[in-house]
Amino acid sequence: MIYLTYGNQSHGVYSSYVIENCKYISENLNYPVKIIALVSIRGFFEMRRVRKELNPNSIILPMIPGFHRWKWNIFTLVLLWPFIGNKKVMALSPLAANLAISLKNMGLVAKVIYDGEGATAAEWNEFEVVGKGSLKRDIWQIENRAVNKSDMQRAVSHKMFSYWIENFSYSGKNRIVIPCLLNGVFADAPSFGKIPYEELFKEEEADQIVLVYAGSSAQWQSMDLLEKALEPIMKQDKRLRLLLLSDQSENDCRIKSKFPSRVVLKWVPFEQVPAMMALGDYGILLRNPSVTNFVAAPTKFAEYLACGLKVFISPGVGDYPDMVAEKQLGEVIDQPNELQNIPLEKTSLAEKQKLREFALNNFVRTSFKDSFVKIISL
Image (cartoon, rainbow, N blue to C red):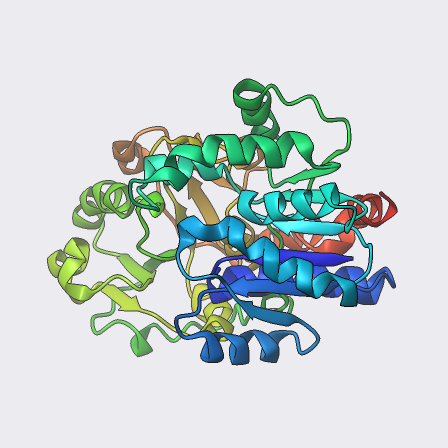
């Protein structure tokens, strides 16, 4: 099987979402998967080096310059395909899926599986991912074709299928849900023993409680909502500390400027994230209402749990709010000011171990073996 990607996904997403899934299928299910990645010509050789380190067997090719010229990449793939053979293709993103569908229409590909990681058309319009132009105008049609002309569809949440049904009249029968799963770096148990707060925070309080936010400063991450929710409780409870594992600059981080000694802003290599997250008591997953967030399955949810953090989550984040309420994994926060009404206490070692156990039972690839088998059996 070929796994086709188009565009430059972040290192974390590419590693956990693409590499780890392909590795599991190849090694655990004995079904070879080759990754073909079309990446930007800007910084191509460095990107190729990084991707090859992650997966030496992958084929990394430069995209035709200009994102709006995405269709032209079919010529690159047609020239390559005689060396590939008539195989099924799993495609990440609507653009990659449309290229694969075109190859199928030429008789070069047997089956196409659309790997729907998000609501791309909605995201592009809600968060101005791409500028104005024909591609932004046509993305609804492109995503519709990916959803309805592929032979199987994988979604990261049940909410995504509901979205496809409502917006694209989707009626596919070959459908599976596999959420965003844990990266291998979260498999090793983090240390839940003595927490060296002094290495992070200049001031110490007895029984201090650490809130953790891990993620980028991209618009859909709703940093404004985080600040609105946390500022009142930081003022209210002097025990609270905030660890921001984010690429946000200190100049733009208002909550850091208001609580300089109680907020630590760090951007660490992905491999160091589990150890840093395990220092905390609660993970923050608050997001503004949007279609992008409604269908999402943020990997951060599973990562927080794997590091022993209770999760504060907004009600419109994919399938997870219902899971949090049912399994008592944290709190569903309807409005930012609700946090002031929740009594915060340190997460005990027993609670941390229980949360980690839940993550390892529900967000690892072996738990979705039947779904992966369905993919390779198509």
